[in-house]
Every structure is written in structure tokens, then in C-alpha cells.
Image 1 (cartoon, rainbow, N blue to C red):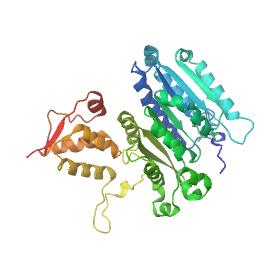
Image 2: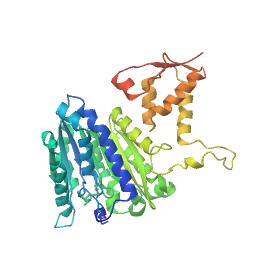
Image 3: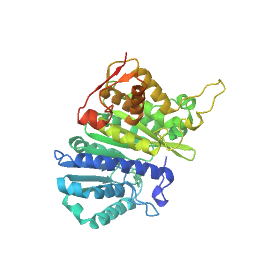
Length: 372
Ligand SMILES: C[S@@+](CC[C@H](N)C(=O)[O-])C[C@H]1O[C@@H](n2cnc3c(N)ncnc32)[C@H](O)[C@@H]1O
């Protein structure tokens, strides 16, 4: 399947959503490492950079990364963290590599206008097939705190050879872009089969707009049972197609950041730029006279049952349960406070201490107990 040359056109709404999620994550990720003096050097990899801007001059991923670095200039200059960028752009089957030339020029111009970047920034530009470059750069990805963007056209990068390598990395957070609904159209072609063996009947049985979730479930099913890697989806609808981001990381600090970003984008489901579970219809009574629960209501209901059956339970266990279910601490906090108000749950103090900072950074572990 020929790749679409999106840069001859303006970015569409779905592409902007994707780019904003990428940049929001960079905005959260960069200061985490910059503010800790023990990390002298951090690396950011954009394996499919594009030329830097779309046809209307809207910034693409590499320029957005530079903007996020610019926002942190004061902190970076004070801690002297070195930032190494790896920008790659390659147009297979083309002799002239115009996008690559534009990428270098656009980044060069941006950096020239911000001369302080020269104190700490090392940009590297590559014009190689991302599939090959990925393996060349793996030792560097492995060695430093790394943020990896894989903004591919299509699906190739979710194949096992790449995912197995990403799974082995401990200090890397990554964001994939996957054309998930293409599996339904092209699932029988070699390219798609190599990326992920999906049984077409499974796809047909599933809800079309849940395709990206299904792809994520398939990817998860290929990971080792005891893997520490946590993966989360964000589905993006473009006309009749479903695309999506897959976020991966091994630590809860990263998961906390990503989930906050995705729930801020969509406070109904936290995982799509549309009403993926038709939650807006759920306050109506269905044909069996039942009211279906929304995603948040269902989560809160399950958590409430757990808190009323497992006792004592720590804030740490509840926080991990919250993340594992793709929710943010705020949802759980509301349940816990409500149970305390009802006199059914007890914990010392006013706050349930249910934040990443309390549990993992300050190690402020408390217990919630059922009141007899
Ligand atoms: C979805 S676009 C990425 C857009 C970019 N992140 C941005 O914000 O503009 C995919 C890019 O990857 C490039 N590309 C296609 N095949 C590639 C390959 N095998 N290796 C590296 N880059 C490739 C395309 O030319 C295109 O610019």
C-alpha cells in the first residue's frame, strides 16, 4: 500500500489530535528528567519526523518538540541537562528526499532563532528507513532516558520484532501511531499479516469503532505474561476510519502522565476523540428496562464493591488498580471519599492520599478499612 504524502495537504483534525497528544506528553516528560540532576543526558527519537510543517505552516512533531523544549529553557539551562534529538525522515521509492531536506532546514531555522539551544541541544538528522534505523539506535535508546515516537503511516511497527525490543527497555516511554481500521481492509495482505496476525472473523465480530482497542488487545496478548510493560490506547476517528495512538511505558509516573492527558482530552471515556462506548446514550432506559452504566460509573461501581470486600487495602493498591483499568486517581478518590462520608470506610486524616506523588514519590502509604 502506497504511503499517503500528507504534507502536501494541511493536517486534518485527527492528525492535529495525534500531534497534540504527542506534544502534551513531551511537555510532561521533559521536565521530569530535566528537574532531576542525576539525569545528565536525555534522548528523544522521532523516527517518522516529516518535513516539520504541513502545507499551511502548521507545525509537525519535530517542531512541536522543539517548542516544548523551548518552554523548559529556564529549567534546562539551570540544571544543564543535555538533550539529544534524533529526527528521521525517509521517503521510500523516491530519489529526491525533499521532506528530509525540509526537515533539516526547518529545524535549523528554529534552532538558529533560539541560540540558547546551542548550550544543551544536540540534534541528529537521519535519512534512513526507520525499520533499520531503529535497530541501529537501540543501544542509545537503551542507555538513556528516552522518549520514542513512531508516527508511521500504516501498521508495520507493531510487528513482533520491534515490540519485543521495546518491551525490553526500562527507561523508555513510547508513542505509536497505528492505522487500526486498515486491518479490516487489508488484514489479509502480507504487510498486515506480518505486523499482527488478526483473524478477520474476529474483526468482523467486533465493533468497527473499537478496532484500535482490538489491535491493542492483540498486541498485549503477544507480550510475556509477566511483562512490566503497560500499554494504553487512544482511538482517533477520521471519517470512516479508526486510527490510534498506543502509549507504552514500564513505570507508573509515565502512566499517570499519559492517562491525565487522555482524560483531559475526553472526560467521558479518556481513550478516544469520540464517544467510543456511546456513553451519551447510557442514561436512557433500554428495552429491558435497565439503565446501562457509563465507563466511569462502571469503574466506580466495581471499585466500590472491591473496597467493601477487601480490607484493609492500601492507597498504593487502589492507585495501581486505577491505572491498570485506564482511569485517573480523581475517579477513585471520589469513590473513597463518598464511602467515608457514608460511614462505611475509614482512613486517617482528611485526604485518601491517592496521587502518584503521595504513593510513589513520597511513599505516603495509608490503609482504607471497612468500618464495622
Ligand atoms: C505520518 S507521517 C509523520 C508525520 C510527522 N510526525 C509530522 O508531524 O509531520 C509519516 C512520515 O514517515 C515518512 N516515511 C515513510 N516511510 C518511512 C520509512 N520507511 N522510514 C522513515 N520514514 C518514513 C513519510 O515520508 C512521512 O513523512
